[in-house]
Image (cartoon, rainbow over all chains, first blue to last red; front, side):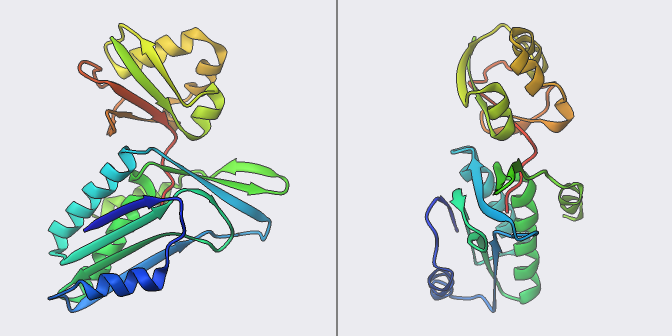
Amino acid sequence: MAVRVQAEPFDLGAESTAFAAGLRRAGAMVTFTGLVRDNGGALQAMEIEHYPGMTERAIAAMVDEAVTRWSLEDALVIHRYGRLGPQDQIMMVATAAPHRGDAFAAAEFLMDYLKSRAPFWKKELAADGSAWVAAKDEDEAALKRW
Amino acid sequence: MVLDVLYFAWVRERIGLGRERVETTAVTVADLVAELSAREERYALAFADLKSLRVALDQDLAEFSAPLAGVREVAFFPPMTGG
């Protein structure tokens, strides 16, 4: 299990390959990558703030929960902070389980929890100003299914 | 007691600082919020709507009714937007 919170970009291919190379029993591996979305085409940058210390603790607790619930062989979460550009990779999740259903479910669980329980805040910077991204009710509602 | 109080995102911007030490006799988080709000307008503005705020005590999410006894670090921030 690994949790990394970093400013630097990550190499999706290299991370996926290294994660796969460490597996001994799994029959399924799922990876998800979140990108900086540019809804209207006016986004110049996204600034991601986080709470050092709590971020790592909160994500580690989610990963432990996922590993227990879906009998994961391994799980990885990388989440960036700082200034990112449109289409940059923000974060990735990788899960490995005996069967794909568990790997998919665990990855979705981690994504849902990262959205509203990991202390990150996004600010969108555009030519006409900047705004904090508001949390969505559906993100909170998404937690109820787990 | 002396607490490290942290602010993030627009709470930090509204108050104008990211962290401060606060000497307080507040029993609960809500007491601390009332104490800070009474200090200056910028605090009152940041804490105007508690429904749009979250609090963490020693880096665990908590309720505004939670007691502060034994707590060292209190953080206030808007709902999180990770992922």
